[in-house]
Length: 361
Image (cartoon, rainbow, N blue to C red; front, side, top):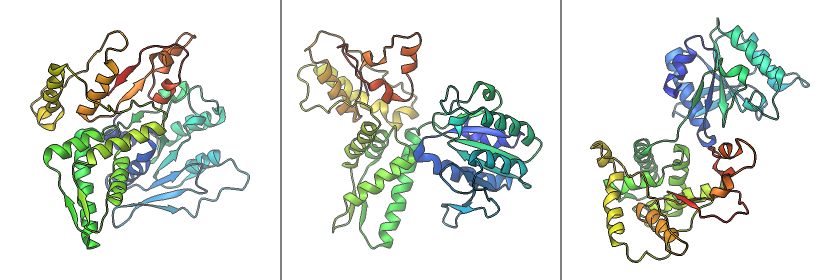
């Protein structure tokens, strides 16, 4: 199921759906679902998780922002289990509505240490009892893996990271908003990026969510603010790579250091790389030109493989992720395969074996 099909799924007597989204974009998804439900289904949207003390109605403010308003009728008894109580509240709710429940998948997750059979039973009961009603539930969180008894009941949707086109559109829109805000504050705001440079900036931001890109733009604009105003130029491109690199480092992902010197010799390879840079542009995609799939470097230690990889990442203006293959190996059947997962931080634990590393850019 795609996000675009979520609303039609809920409107087709499918009472519960799960949406896997990265944390920075949770509010964006809630805002989108609220606006879509209000416009297309004329249906209110509510939000709940263990971190809030009550049930909240999601509203769209006049400026288009998301507002949470506590529901006064929701009064949980002092000693009642909050998760079980919200299920009972939804079951007894007298009107229609979409209830977004955040971070409850650990209680109904496959092989989860906090799995609760009582909660699993509640979810199964609600699935069948909400079908003939106009009440719907959306499970929202990260790395959702439903229990086997729920997999065939609850459709699942994973929100992918934005592509270059989506990032490009977002950057143009957000820079325009920042420029309007600067004009209102009587600040000089100059955007000195040509088409190629702003596309390079979009490529440098690949791997970030739209909210993280917005955070980067605000932080960098604030940092570059001078008495002469704000200048958005090509310096933002390496700063975007640095920002992304810092985020990946916080996630425990090992990063290769940038090249301190350029590689000598191999002039044909350097020429090949500089020519192939154009294959990563929007113009190349519009012409349906294939992108290079990668380079395999092999040779004895000391021949310059690592230095060459660092220079390739520098030429293409991309961060260099370093993966120790030995960290993937496990002694149990299936353990090595299980280590190859979206949670890349698990692959970065060092093993005692000394092996060559694989570099991914």
